[in-house]
Length: 523
Ligand code: NAP
Image 1 (tube, rainbow, N blue to C red):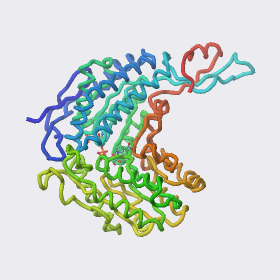
Image 2 (tube, protein in one colour):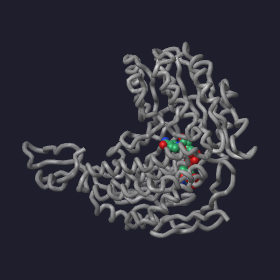
Image 3 (cartoon, protein in one colour):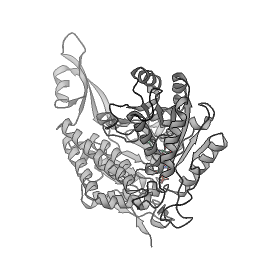
């Protein structure tokens, strides 16, 4: 019988009723576990988080909360191998893909634990300098941040079961808010194990972190004013949740991380054989293959000067056609299956749609001929795929739809103006990367596309040996983007904590105001 997973809510493991959802191994299609949240009392779970977890966290200083976050980081790191194995089994990750997720989780928690040390023994963050309201400092004001008194609900996507849980929880817990976290059901095995570790070792005060394994049920409909919803997933679900009556009426804070047509741009100055060119090719290939292309930050559109199209096509086609697809537990396999059958169907349908709209299929374009080490016909595989358009505006779909799989599209451009306009047609992205050693070009492109992105990665010969790839989200830098990307912003050190804090203007007798925020880190 498949393993039965429970939810950790209101301080206890609870099993759902009714017909369970199945968690599948996407390589073998075998059922690994089952879970249900039917019958879980969501209103009670929220009340427990707000009333028990909230006061416990708010009674602590940043430093004390940071110590908790550090314990979570260590607990994940100690069971790294076990967790990686679960990523291979349930998410179709190669070991390297799963490490990216699991290590990303412990590193992000660790980074917020470090930040807590800097924030010190205070319970308040101080925003800017005191403002004199009269001629002297007798009457003064000070802006400061205090934690909200509700619960933070975190809804995550299927592609990062460890990091998704950790990156959101680290920020909210450090800010002083209790969390109810919900991984995507299909790949929840790893998140479930992480939660088991936290509970077994009693790392957190009661109510500080709850865990919902399965459908969210009516959870979101119980949110109210002091609660927060941080969502990662499709734009459609994000829009639906943001528009719910209680969410709108209660002005519940909502952060959405959604789709993104991330661009990689090769500057017209970059010749093949240079370090900058090689960095560009490496980043594009990594993003088309790592996690089988199921990264929100993966490069979907590859903009190349028209005059260099042939050499770029050759370089990418060569690498992608050699990428081995198959059982992700094998050392020689670079690309595992997609996480679910639905993902595979959606990706294949979208590739077909792009091809019918005029994209040339350079490499791949369907299921792979062979999946190494996998029974014929089994597994949710898609071959690494390189598409190409004849001209920058030739296929509108390329600038409007995300293919969330091992697929990217080559797009030739003739001028910097046309390039900027086309990148912006993506409607708002998480990240774009620009590879150029021409300072003037970099400046033009950055000023042209900055307002439609959350992050811009600038690759050149000076950083080619040490660059952090655009697909890697770092705790110190903001993650999010405008428009299609959801309009959200996570991480970025202290910046990410603002979602969980209320900025208050304290005004009155200057010395009294100053005493209220004494010891607080000025940000
Ligand atoms: P999805 O269907 O929107 O699901 C995402 C999450 O929302 C899952 O946990 C899902 O739970 C939950 N959910 C669905 N309907 C809900 C509802 N009515 N109320 C509450 N929760 C609900 O997204 P997906 O298609 O699985 O995910 C892939 C998409 O996520 C891609 O388009 C990708 O671009 C995006 N993504 C974005 C980022 C980012 O950081 N910007 C990161 C990763 C992925 P169940 O699993 O239980 O259905």
